[in-house]
Image (cartoon, rainbow, N blue to C red; front, side, top):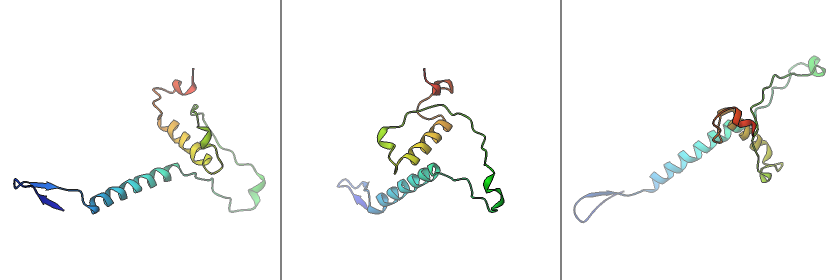
Length: 104
């Protein structure tokens, strides 16, 4: 909607479609972030022969970070841990260098 000011100038106003579009974009961004944090499981084995053979993974340490106690509930812990992994991988949490991730 566009309104005309008393001096003849055009004043733009926020319309429902503008706010709906902004909310839709915000929801889409949140969905993408949650998808990035979503746990990805190792695929199940198709054959039954190799079930007794252990699966081995090469891992490296990303450092450490704190997780709030309230985030360690059964419903929230997986998401909290995955968020920590992503944050440490991307160097988030205002850590200046890799050494800083290891604490004092």
